[in-house]
Amino acid sequence: MYAIVEIGGQQFKVENKATVFINKMDVKEGSKIDFDKVLLTDKEGDVKVGQPTVEGAKVSAKVIAHVKGDKVKVFKKKRRKGYKKLNGHRQEYTQIEIQSITA
Image (cartoon, rainbow, N blue to C red; front, side, top):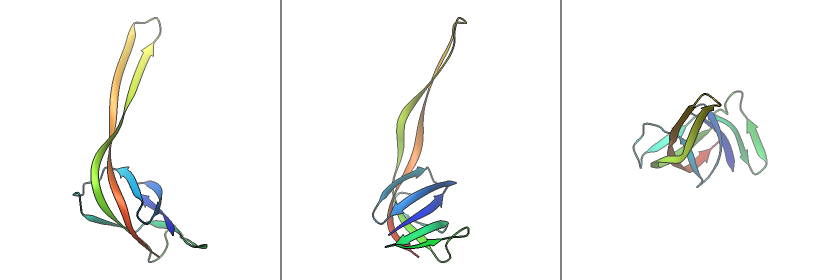
């Protein structure tokens, strides 16, 4: 069984016991979260599509950790002008584990 859930404006395909990295949320590690914006569920071929969400569907997850992603280097340059700029960025994520999907 899997579901497509909207979390923080992004859509994720989740399954039971799957680990997902989402944008950082202000939630303590070890706590549980419920997501109600379930857009689609599939249980062994029985597909339910919401308009816009599936009624009564819910995804429960547990927060594992808050982590940082890989460093992304942003390099800007204008040729023949002597302008060079190097910036780095590391996105912060919340790692969650899907506990159950109820449809």
